[in-house]
Amino acid sequence: MAGTTDKVLQVELVAADRLVWSGQATMVIARTTEGDVGILPNHAPLLSSIIEGVVDVQTVEGETWIAAVDAGFLSVADNRVSILSERAEMSHEIDLEQARAELERCQQAGENDDEAQEKVRRAEARVRAAERAS
Image (cartoon, rainbow, N blue to C red; front, side):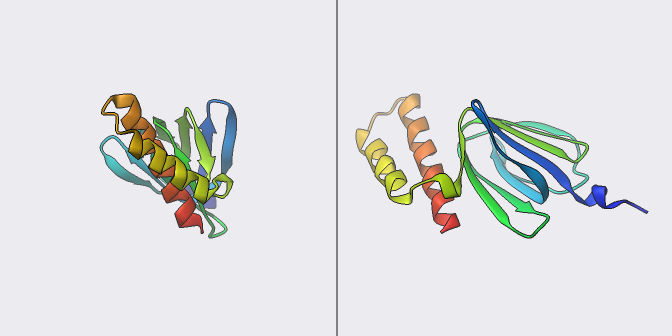
């Protein structure tokens, strides 16, 4: 008979400058370069690049934690999920109006280079995360 630890993920969401969130979860959803991936307990080992987007964490208490992340990496092994990103912030840390204003500024800049597009994707992720939390 499987123990309860087989039904739980230990999750760490880490930004370059801090541990953003850590705890036990029943599911994690993140956006990789190949598309969205859902991680459940006993998932096969995985190492993938993530892109700017939203990460959903369903905790064992039934709560949903939402974070906006920059590009980075997702690692899954032995019911441990590590999400490593240059920048990450929980949705409750994001001021929605400021995030919308930043998105508008980025879109109006109208530059077509990769850095400008990255800023737009980052701003969009922050807005989506804040909207989903409200």
